[in-house]
Length: 339
Image (cartoon, rainbow, N blue to C red; front, side, top):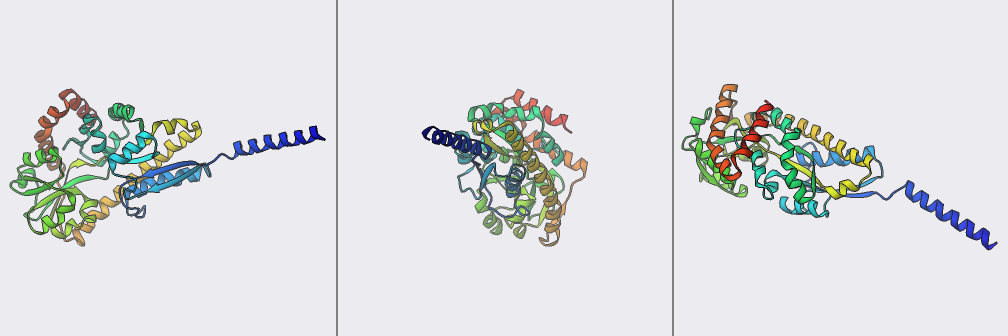
């Protein structure tokens, strides 16, 4: 009887282990990003995070327990980047500026006038040579880039006069980010650059402390900048770039099938983000014309080329002094190959 009982218990244990193996515990995944958790239709980063989450839940039901943390709940860009590095966060939204604090050569991605279109920046974000510029920072931080995206081009607005060419910038007082590269750019165009925190910008425009600023269309709308600006020129002097990165050790710990699933989810997010931005650029521009009562000037191809040349020529020496000529020229060659 004792032998029979022992056999039954052994079989029960084997069955329990088999069932546990067949139904593994869901893998916990934290996705951290900066903007508020608006709907996927109204917030680009929510769109990306939800696409990754929904793709994995649909294709691997029960295998993941994914939680999203918007609004910087888990910290700033630098803090969530550190979290992805030490493994306390599986997937984090990080802008290229935060990554450049680890490796300043990544500032090549922010050279004004180097990229001419959304199609070109998207090609750059999927180009092996271009992405190889992140090899050093990925190794140093123990992270892997899942996908990169662009929220679109940054454009100049002002309330002095209609701007069509770089010469029209002369003397206009422009707020820029607190980044010396943007100061050099505006000064090269003949404007007066005033570095300023974005939180102070609206009041400064309202009080005419400054006369203009530069931002993507989405920010011009979201920050209500259009309420205190009369003119917009879609010069596209810089294309914004940010990434969703994951902890490399976590990714490597996944079964091969799940690794491929995470890659596929990231690709789906890239495609979804592109469609979002295309829609936003078109509808946002129309909103600024009609609801925002802004005078919008869209430069011709020749005029855009002049804008980009002026921006690049005006900042090239500064970037070279910061990073090195070989690094800058190699990256610009990659960009030019994607035209």
